[in-house]
Structures are given as structure tokens and as C-alpha cells.
Image 1 (cartoon, one colour):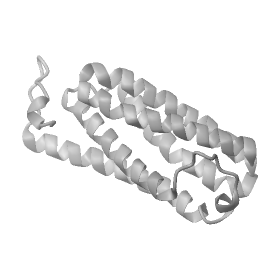
Image 2 (cartoon, one colour; image 1 turned 180 degrees about the vertical axis):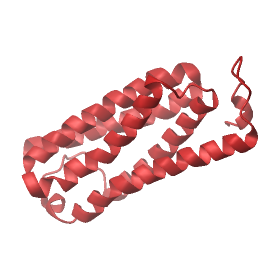
Image 3 (cartoon, one colour; image 1 turned 90 degrees about the vertical axis):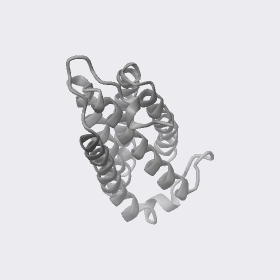
Length: 177
């Protein structure tokens, strides 16, 4: 089990106090849940429209699984980023790619669900490009978070796996709709 005491002091840096660590964790959870909420809006608005009748991959899970998985994955990313932040390592390109992954993740449903009624199948290809950017950014986070904290790196792996799985679903939709 992960505890706050698992976060070592960085040489030359004062340890973040327990209060600051709790505030940081709540901040990362809040940021992740805000991104999840923004990403959910175009899905809720369009999931019963064109998407309900579209061709879906035979390996597409039920809708409830998407909501459940994304909530779990956003929480895992928040904890992962918090662990890296606690070690003063969420800076520079690591911070850039952390923010980029949140933006890609929020942009994908806008492209896939939101643009489709306006531009049709082209939206699915745009969404695939966005999802590819998400995959690259999450892959970068695995490489950057892992050496800072084994737990942080491991928490990102299910996310990367789910994004790759989502890429396959998006590609099927783009090819068959």
C-alpha cells in the first residue's frame, strides 16, 4: 500500500509537509476530474445520436465500462502525477507532457463525438490523430514517471494500455463509417 511516507525527501529540497501533500493530491484529483467532466460533455450529447447507429468494432465494450475505466484511469493519473510532484520532478518537459495528455484526452471526445455531426467521417480520422497524440504523451509519461517513482510509472501503464485499445476502436470506426 502506498503511503505518504513512501515519498522520499529530494536531496537539497525540503520535504513537502503533510498538509501540502494532501492539498497537492486533492488538486491533482480535482484537475483530473475536471478534465474527465469536460471530456464527458460531447459524449453525453452525441452517444444516442449518430454514434448509437454507427458501425462499432466487435470488441467494443458496453458504455458503462468506458465511464468506469476513464474514472479509474483519471484518478490513477492524478495519483501518479502527485507522486512525481511530491519528488519535485513534475517540471519542464514532464510537466508539458502531463498537461498535453490532459488536453489530448479532453480533445478526443470533442473531435470524435462533437465534430462528427458537422464533418462526418473526417472527424473520426481527426480523432484518431488526437488519440495518437494522447498515446505518445502517455508513453512519454511512462518513461518519465517510472524512474522518479516505480508506483507512478506503474499507475500510468493501464492508461497507456487503454489508450492503445481505444486507438483500435477509433480506427475501426473510421474505416467502417
